[in-house]
Amino acid sequence: MSWLLLVVAGLFEVAWAIGLAYSDGLTKPAPTVATVVALAISMVLLAKATQTIPIGTAYAVWTGIGAVGTALLGIALFDEPATVARLLFVSLIVVGIVGLHLVSPTH
Image 1 (cartoon, rainbow, N blue to C red):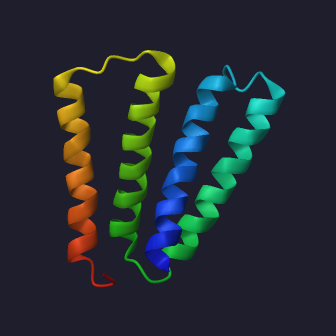
Image 2: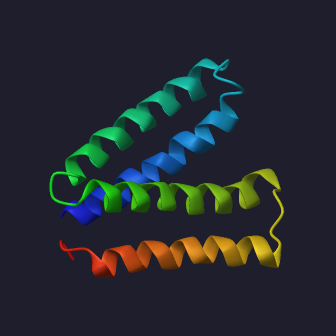
């Protein structure tokens, strides 16, 4: 259950990171509120997951999910470059996330 909470926390991290772009520097009220709510949900779920997953593992996975999701949505939504090198390095983050899950004592 903790790993599911951690994955959902990571998805909410993606949501608040993308929300930052839509909030235009936190100047647009609706996207700013959505960003803050997503941030709060992400933090609460991360905190809950760390009750059974070591903090180092949980934080690395959480930020990894956020980095991968945000990078991919940046490509899809904001026309950021989708170079082979960039996608290769994003895939290495995915490998790290999977690896941490496989070697975690709570696996």
